[in-house]
Image (cartoon, rainbow, N blue to C red; front, side, top):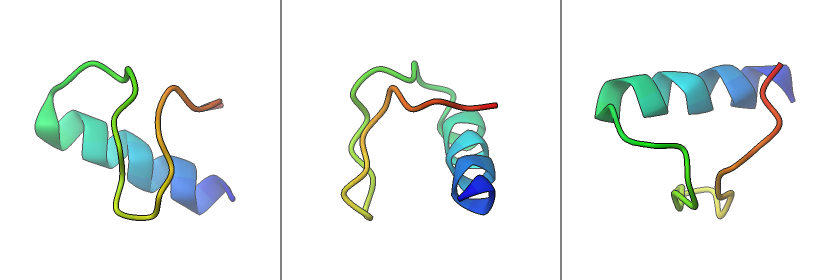
Length: 35
C-alpha cells in the first residue's frame, strides 16, 4: 500500500503535526512504517 503511505505523508505535511497516534479517517493510526 505504497499509495496509502504517500497519502499519509501528504496528510502529515499538510497538518504539520507530529506523527504520533494520529487517527485517520480510514481507521489507520500513526506511527506507521513509511519507506
